[in-house]
Amino acid sequence: MQLQWKKSEQSQAGLVPAWHPNFRNHEQLPDTKVVRTFFFVNVTAITMVLSFVLLFVFQQLRINNLGRQVADWQANIATNKKSADEAVVLSRKFSEEEKKIRELDAFLKPRLVLSEFLIYVGKTLPSELVMDTIEVRDSGVTIHGLAAGLPDEASGRISAYVNQLQQDKYFASLFESKDVRQEVRNDKATGRMGFDLTLRYKGEPKK
Image 1 (cartoon, rainbow, N blue to C red):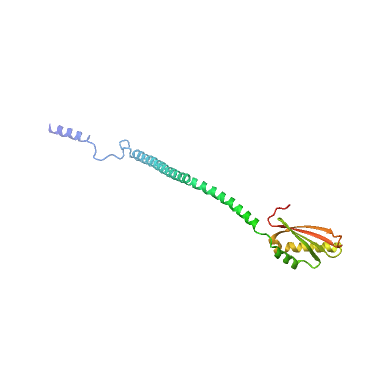
Image 2 (tube, rainbow, N blue to C red):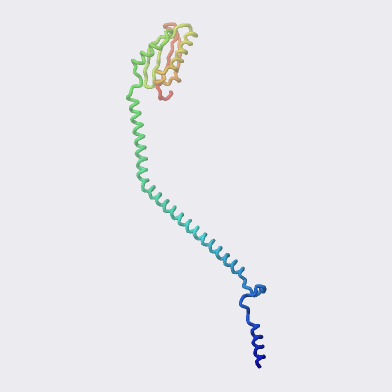
């Protein structure tokens, strides 16, 4: 009886599982690789979602900030618009008044000091030419005179005097020196060639 009991105990002892897993039996080992892959996939997905959420929140905050700035600018524009419109109206009125004052000053201010003009013309007039009369108008001055010599010589001397006037700084400061109207005629009383030179004031419209 004693031997049978021991044999029974030994047979039952063989069925007790080992204290460590059998790494040779892959079917009984836990699938740890699947657990790790699933874990990292979840972490990556959660990280991406959080990143998109943070980016969206940041963009919304930025848009809201820009919206507030635009609203502030529009408020400043609306506040200053009335003052700006009034300033523009005053500027236009000032320009119109300034134009009137300049026109009045130009009208009242003598364009030509006649005594000074006569002295200068007498000094610069060639000896072959004689000044007969000077006609002063609102738009300019006309010099009437006579030229000595034959018609061709007299005509050339008149043309040379016109060129002299056009290059003279004094005449250029008063008249449109590039636009001297020249008229030549035969003076029957003297037998010489007469000339009329019309000088138009600077800024006067051409007629």
